[in-house]
Amino acid sequence: MTRGFLDVTEAWNGESVVTAFDSATGAWIFVALHDTRLGPAAGGTRMASYPAPVDGLIDAMRLAEGMTWKWAGVGVRFGGGKAVIAIPDDLGDEARAGLVDRYAAHLVSLRGAFQTGVDMGTTPEDMARIGAISGYAVGLVDGKPGDPGPYTARGVLAGIRAALEHRFGEANFGGRAVLVQGLGDVGFPLAGLLAEAGATLHLTDLREEAARRAQTRFGGTVIPADGMWEVDADVYAPCAVGATLNPDTIPRLRCGIVAGSANNQLLSDADAERLRARGILYAPDYVINAGGAVAFSAIHRGERDETRLRARVDEIGSSLREMFEEAAGAGESPLHAARRRARRFLDAHGGPPPGAG
Ligand code: NAD
Image (tube, rainbow, N blue to C red; front, side, top):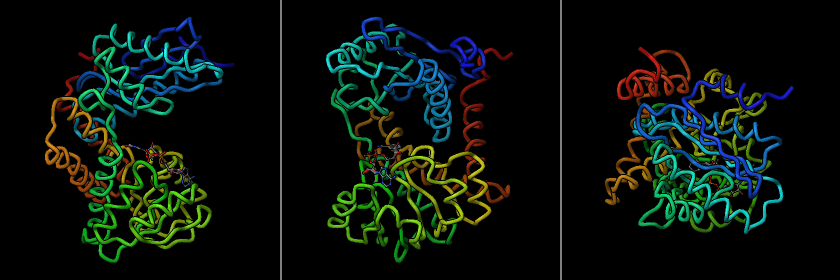
């Protein structure tokens, strides 16, 4: 039996979900606010078709909780929230444009309780439109959509540096080999930063031309997508899809560190322990890939100084360093240390949970 809206909402550990039905298109809008103790909720807006609207609601709730941990994990004072617009399969361009406008008006009615950015199915242009109508889009630089990729790449580089130091005793890239999977918005600039830092690159992408383009710019070798598990590297940097770390692939890894931008790298939390059992240091994805979010939240609050923005992103390295040490001391995966650190930040800066006391 499929679960209904009410059951799903009642079972959730978040604060509230604001739901709207867009009768003009048949789309459902779910704005899930998981934990707003640190500040107004901020998270992406995902637009997708789901088997049933309730699956969109479940996705919004799951992703909103992820944002709570992400913001608290990197010490940014935003609450965890996410919006899902569950659309019909056959939504045309014109209908979609109207829906985006009405979604923006919906955000106006929430009066800043939720601020949003790009996620799967929405574009920077959508955000420019939503920002113009509502004022509640994050990731706009002077009204125009910004590109988070280079900031995210910078955060990943800082994270890899911290991991090298922890795992091998020095943060030096010279002679270290890094396998970058996915040379897109994050992987491409990351490859550039790694090459500049002196790393040896192995580049792989489902679209081989993307890997070749990076090779032409930054050097290194191109690895066919199905051959990447045969490559020896110090670092595997997943910058493409999720769930590449699972019970089938972990035994095949030939690296000492996993540190990349992809979201949801682990198929399940148990895979973090599998990595630890193999002596592979794992940089929790939602911390190491937060560079874009960190930079854009600072830009949103008026910061424009590039040096300060970069320094803020580089702090991801120090956060990870502390997590690695705490995890090593406790004999557990950095995944657990990251969660504990986020909880500590929430408790210290967010006050008691809503409804407590
Ligand atoms: P992108 O779409 O620009 O690039 C992804 C690249 O991966 C593409 O070149 C694609 O061809 C390749 N790819 C897809 N599936 C692959 C596979 N199975 N094997 C090898 N290559 C594959 O995406 P992006 O913005 O660079 O994001 C990469 C990852 O990082 C995603 O998981 C994203 O959710 C995450 N992330 C991105 C940002 C950001 O600032 N863009 C921030 C946080 C997290």
